[in-house]
Image (spheres, rainbow, N blue to C red):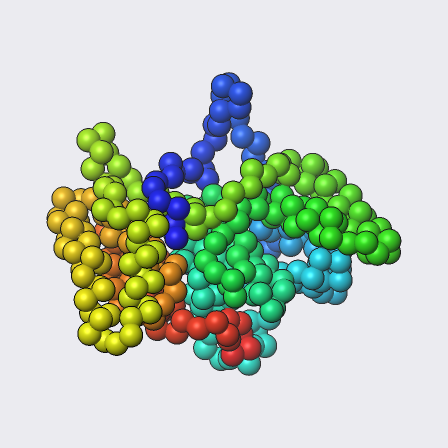
Length: 334
């Protein structure tokens, strides 16, 4: 589920960070050579600002394969640039679907509103990577990876595209025994590393398993903004399991009692401006994945996002729940 508890907000606009106890300036990356019209089109369709590494990686892939930058990583890594990269590639102009919903474009079954797909891989497991941001008006805090056919867990891949693809590449190198493939991966690694170093992107990654990602909510000096749920992750999963495996509707209604009690606590918490409680339970139930919880998720998450002034995320979760499935995630070909 969410990996119980809060994370401290990491502002993407932050100019200072601590390194070994010392504070130093974070390097400001030069602007990638991507036309402003394309940048504006991405922002208009997704209503989200993209970090500069997004555009720098597109330029990198253009150099690898000028005719098809989106497929530049396909031969060596089996990865395809997707999501907002489809706008840079102009795929939306010739889409089969005349009215795509970009909130749902490459949005997989377990992707919360905070997650935005940018790379897709193995179709059998629905492996994909995406930016994860705490608020729609902030830049991403990390790149995560998920295999939607296996569950809701997000693995942290780094804080920029170069680091994420480098980590994926290093894992692939350990799996390959074919010398020709090994040479191909080594060549890509050299080009990737050189580009990242030239642009000033770190390739270091502290890997963790997420969703698991925790949640970020503003908390004031009196600790108002978040209060913990009365159930642990383990006990909440047991409650959800009993509900989904109930032999009949009567037993299921009875099994819902602990969650109904939590809903009452959340009403009190919201009245006292502790909005994080409903947010946390909503994400937990969403991540469990059962349709039995969709009604409660609809009650909890749009309200939590709106109370937290993350209205775009409220729109995204409502659209996702209205069309939540494990197939047809490419809105442009749907």
